[in-house]
Length: 505
Image 1 (spheres, rainbow, N blue to C red):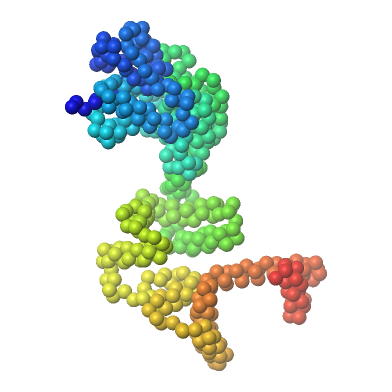
Image 2: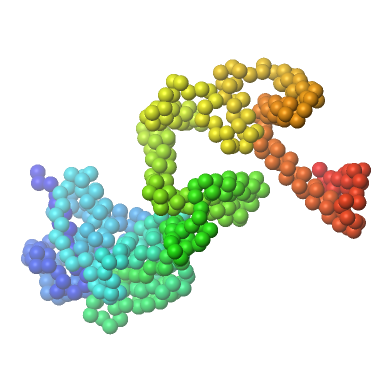
């Protein structure tokens, strides 16, 4: 039994003169045999010319699907499925504008389905629709770079996916903007990366001799043109490096520019990994503060400040030939893939506990691969001492409790806490007081952990509450129009109690 074959033919960008000799002879033979040729669309000048020159040519198209389909994501899948279904009954010709392998999503899906259905294919190339488009906008893609995306692929992207798919600083071509509905969706998608009034060009690829081949208009008017059809490609010129504010690459450029000799910023040029340490901590805590205050509007800004520190360190490292931002991305991407085999591999888990157990096992394997003697590691190793002291204390306590080093009841914690308090009271000098207050705080952290309370978070909440109350105390003092130094302890306590009553705590 002969395997049904699909011959995929490229019709070129528009003029029948662009059809290859091989392609024309193939269509001539089909006309002589009165065989049906399946065209992705009839809306193409070559199809009109073929009907005049080869009147016996039997033409079928999938134009109805463009009008009937409500789901852009499955449009080409529907076309491919119908092409393959017909091909299973016998060899067919499937003709598409341009070159079959350039900007033709339906062809890529057909090639995939034919492999699954054990069908054979043959590609008969044609001049790509991109050639006249590049000529119309006078752009050399090798010199400037170029992005190409099908309109139906672009419009199904989520807003957060568009920034990763479209690079605004590189010329963009959006193929197959075939009606106003698609144009409207394309406009909304591109508004994630470009200004609403950004000048774009609609290029008609089907009639390359037309004086109206190119129409320039602002992006927001893209869906207001009434003559859009399947022959149009959208050209979006690149924005400047300082204008693509939603692009990670812009931040990298800004940091490089700030540290550039000799016309960068003097302060930024002086920074090193060591001088930047305090800013990393400061920005991390400002992110934490917005999280605790549930200030989601400010969170994006504070995360940006923290990200700035990452890019600054990466640029310092690049200039010193230590590492670059690409190394940062590579390490974290590889690590996340490696540590989530239940997502990116074939490991199965049923609950969070198993995820954490796997996570720790994978981290141990990573340390061993890096040359660490994991057998010699202590229980308290790898806890960063630069973390907040209460956090370190509770992490130490959590780790030793896993091996049984723990009080049996909270009453024992109270006894130990009272013991540490008495030792502090009995301290004879500042050094002893400093040591005993540390022991006392350590036991306070223990009490908090016994009650399943994050000691660091609890203290931050207490600080925040104190600040709110004292701000009311200050306001009350201002209303009395007295200098702070004139208040005695009793008066301050009175104001404090009034503040508590006002706040309601």
